[in-house]
Image (cartoon, rainbow, N blue to C red; front, side, top):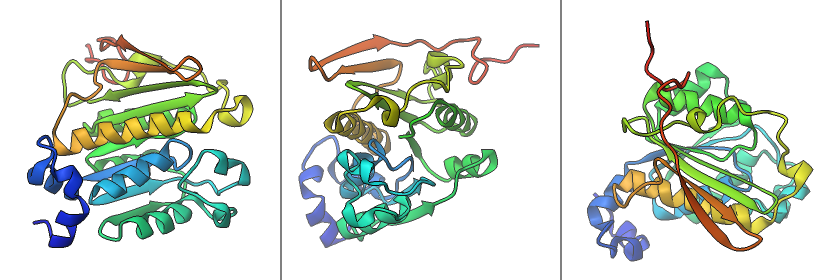
Length: 251
């Protein structure tokens, strides 16, 4: 049940007919894994905590650097030198002491990643490199857990939801194949702060929809954001039957 304090805290959200008391209870009982607490993970963690998602699992092995503060709004100047997980724990606890926070301060290997994914209801990939995205996707496919994937660099952003519970849903590998780890990172190519805020906020919204059970998640669709011209474009994405990660095995 929701306490009187929770009813008051989440009242504006509960007023929405798509959420209501039942949806808020689903959020309270929901568990989310956030992989990466940088530019994308910052707004994701803040909005999921504020919305009352009952259990947030935070994964990041990096420390806060002064250059992060231009866009990673969960951290502040006093956080510089701290682990991003500890900085986020402090901020999220102050924001909403009603929720439970779980920390993963070390890099997740195949086994620990699989266990971390298995322990939650939805995964949000807020990382900044292809190998991590591929590993997270494979773990989500293996565990049958929905994945909310976002990316942003320079003045361009992307967002999609991959849900292995739905037969028609592609996975990350269907869309990007083997990709390349030679892709530039924000530290090499730059990024404007509000763009990661937009992408991260949309990731949080998709996670709330999945957890509370309302709306139409961004499954089978890729949202492209052009921040320079302030344009949004949507592409249809189909599942690849021959995908080496989620495809049907033969033989």
